[in-house]
Every structure is written in C-alpha cells, then in structure tokens.
Length: 530
Ligand code: FAD
Image (cartoon, rainbow, N blue to C red; front, side, top):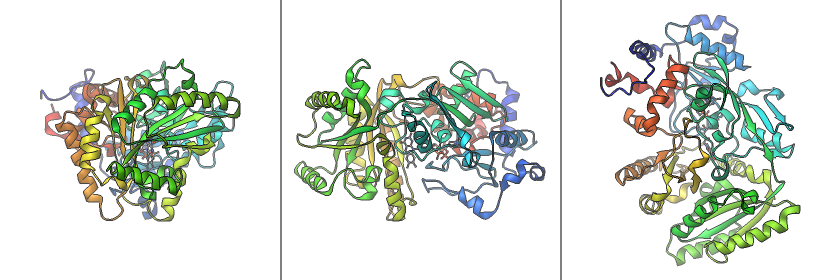
C-alpha cells in the first residue's frame, strides 16, 4: 500500500505483529495476574472503576477492566512486563490527576494505573538539591507540591502551568505551558533527566545526552512511549513578592502588538530579569464561571467601569494583558522605574491599569481558589468542552475576527478565554510536542463550562472553529490534541509522523500504552496493512 507512512527502520513483519497485537488486546485480564504480588494491587470493584471512568472534561465515560494501585515504579514495570509476555497483551494507561478533556487517560478493557498511589505516604518522592539547583520529583507528584517543596529553599521551577493541581507526568506528556513559556519555554524545555518505564517494562534513565531519543519522544509524547516515574527539574531563585498587573485594551491590534513587544524583551535588558509572567485574556464578565482562574482580582466597582467601557465601544468583551514582576523590597524602587518606562510604552486604555501585590506562591496558586469556589457550587464537575489551539502570529487577527468576534460572538462568557504569544525558539523541535512553524505563535484557550444544557452548542462551535481555521488556511495546531481520524493525526504530526511511529515501535512495540489517545487505532485500517 503506497499510503502507509512506513517507518524507515521497520520490517513488514514488525508492522504485522504490531497490528495483530492491537487487534487482540481488548481481551480481559489473565487469571494468573491475580496470583502475583502486583495482582494484590489491582481492583475491579465498581467504586474503583467508576473513580477513573471520567475526567475533568466530563465529556466521555469509559470504565477499564481494572485499576492498578502501585506502591513503586517497580510495580509499574512489573505490570507492563506481565502484559508484554502475554500472547494477548492488555492495554495500560497511566492516569495522573485525570485532568484531560477527552478521556485521554482512560483505558477501555485494560488497566488504568492510579499514578498518585506511588507517592502516597512517601516523602522520598520529592528531593530538592539546593547545591545543584535541581529537584527530583516523582511523575505522580502534583506541581503544587513541587512548588511548596522548592519554595521552602527560596527556589522554584522556571516554567509552570496556570493551575498546579496537575501531575508532573501528566503535564510533561502534553507540554506544560503558561505565562512563563515565552521566556523559559514550556515545562518540557525545563527538564534535565527522566526515569521512564517503556512499553516493554524496561526502566530507563534518559536525558539530552543519554538515551536522547526516548527523552525527546516522551516529552510531549501523549503517554505513548513510556511512563514518567521521575523528572529532574532545574531550579532558580524565586522572589517572595510580586506585582501583578492587568492592563485593559479595547483594540486587538494594540493588545497583540504590546504582547509581542513584551515577549521579545532581550535577555540582556533589565526588565527581562524582573518579568515573571505574561498572558493575555478576554474580559467578559465578573461572574465566577467566566472568571474563576483569578476570581478575586477585580473589585466590583472596577468591573462597573469596564462594563461602561464595553458599552461605549459597543464590545462584547475587552482584552487584558497580565504581567507579573518580581517585587521584593530590595528591588522595588528599581522595578517601579522599569515599570513606569514600560507602561509609557504600551497602548492600553489610559487609566485602566490595575495592580495588586501578592506573594509569589499566592500568585502561582491563584487558580486553586477559583476551583474551591466552583466546587462549592457544583460547577467544577460540569462538562468542559475545552479547545486549546496554537495560532501563528501572522494569522492572529484573522482568528480574532473570525472566531472570537465571529463564531463565538456574544457566547464568550461561559469560561475564560486566553490569548497570549510564545517564542518558537524556546521549544525543542526534536521533542514530540507539535507547534506551528512560525517564530511567534499564540496560545488560544477557550475554556468554557457547559452549565445550562449548552454543551451541544459549545461542541458545535468548537467544530466550526476548527473548520473555519482549515477553510481560511490558518496553519494552527491543537494543544493537547484530540483527533478521531487517521488523517487528523497525520496532519497534526506532519513531517514528524514517521519518526513518532518509529519510536512507538521501538519503545512500545506491542502498542500497550495510553490507547485512549487513539493515535494508533488507525493502524488497523485497511490502507495501513501491507
Ligand atoms: P491525566 O489527564 O491523568 O493524563 C493525561 C495523559 O498523560 C494521558 O494520556 C495519560 O495516560 C498520560 N500520563 C499521565 N501520567 C503520565 C506519566 N506519569 N507518564 C506518562 N504519561 C502519563 N495545561 C497547561 O499546559 N497549562 C495550564 O495552565 C493548564 N491548566 C489546566 C487547568 C485545568 C483546570 C485543567 C483541567 C487542565 C489544565 N491543563 C493545563 C491541561 C493539563 O496540563 C493536561 O490535561 C494534563 O495532561 C493533565 O495532567 P494530569 O496529571 O491530570 O494527566
């Protein structure tokens, strides 16, 4: 078949074995498993199965055959090895904190690994080396615990996610982005070393210089090549206090121009050292559901002024640029000077500058506060038809006109909408994560909650957004991609598809890991069979 994107190093029989494995691996678990020590850590009671049936997206439901509660990496390796030696291997999927949107950590008919149980009651899963400025953390650890452990020594990671109640392995499998990405790259660009259990059950240590292909494959690899059980994260000194500033815009051209100016600040400029974060968002309403990512930033009377501004300009939303700078006492005067120069240079609406001083930890953990409020009202558990895209800078105004002002129109208010740029040079093109091929590109996060029976409409709008981008020739990429067709995945990976497949066959030749990403299910289709 000419269409097959044949990995250069593969033989025909290897592909056939791979396909046969995929075809047969939906059988239930072998009895023998339950006679082993690891078998005592497997549960298939209703409560265990239901606890992993859904995820944050709450759009899909799928129960596995069983849930595995390992106490160590060794247990995980044992389970994968056991699956490998079966004539009909079973699927295995690590589940971090279950914060995917489309069931990516589920495992129909296979075993879900409850990763967090590896770290339960084990203080040795987070180790800070102050002398070496790095920390070793278990893949199952939450970033909030990483923050607290490092901050106790005045240190922190360079690159975070906005929300820290996600596992290290979970975010390193997708990329890990936030307002530090423009400056330091995504989280996957900020890892020194990993311990990985591959799809054959081997425990491998890898880094930029050692088993480099596995290191690059796993980072942003959507759980396809191995399970991350340890990551070594570089640390830098962190401020105690920060100044958190929001600037309001009515005009998208000024808003994007200013963001692009800020992300191009040279590493030698004084400002670069103070800058700790930059993101842009749409501002629609003060209500919790639209604003939970930092629910208490704007007091009510400020919101009234902004409502008047929207009315005056006949807008359904404003834009705001959010900047955070280090603000410890010894540098405060210097930072104020730099900020004054900076603000003079930017084109936000005069008088619409809002500032707060908070601790750095408070700032980094700001989203959790909104989570707690939403949980209280039962709104955290609603369906989340989120859509995350990377859009090249050259087409951001088209996207704004066609999607934000067009397709979403006045429907924007059911969740935060993020729009902020990052620099391609801070990403490593050898890693599995896929980004647009342009020096600067925007992250768009349409993070809506379906509260009043509006799920179908939101899903339909998401579909229209993707169709619009395709029809208009906007070379976007999905972040945390979700495709249901082979063409979709091949288009997503583009020239990297062959390499991805080659590495899959090297590190997970039986196609056991994270099947719900549905990347390899398409190998079963006719045109792939030689
Ligand atoms: P899961 O959902 O449990 O798993 C995700 C995938 O990774 C699955 O395929 C799973 O099999 C695989 N996986 C899990 N653990 C491992 C491991 N140890 N080794 C290998 N593969 C593994 N993302 C950002 O980049 N920036 C943000 O600011 C951000 N904010 C978010 C806020 C909220 C409220 C939510 C719900 C999500 C947010 N995300 C953000 C997305 C998040 O990073 C991803 O969904 C991430 O994969 C979730 O991590 P998790 O631990 O819940 O992983």
